[in-house]
Image (cartoon, rainbow, N blue to C red; front, side):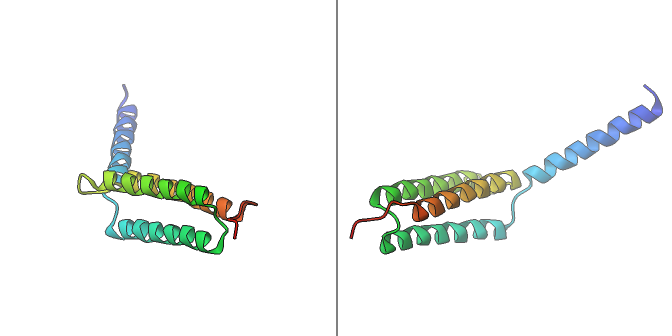
Length: 114
């Protein structure tokens, strides 16, 4: 192996190690607070949908169970004392998915009977 090839290989290893470190580094306290705040807003959206009649009881129960699963996932991520960036990204993606479910359920043709 030439000196140049060895140098490039070592550089690639250092870059890969730095990337792995960044992905497993703890997420900031602000990220955890952002998750909690967003979770609260999503629960409020569900409650508002029930109050307005935009959500049926089965839809509200399904969405509530999804929010409970998100809360359990967050607790699991925090169980070791830190939420890594990778865990935070995954939680945020799950929140995005849940948000879309809420919006779809609130704006579909199903409504609660008066």
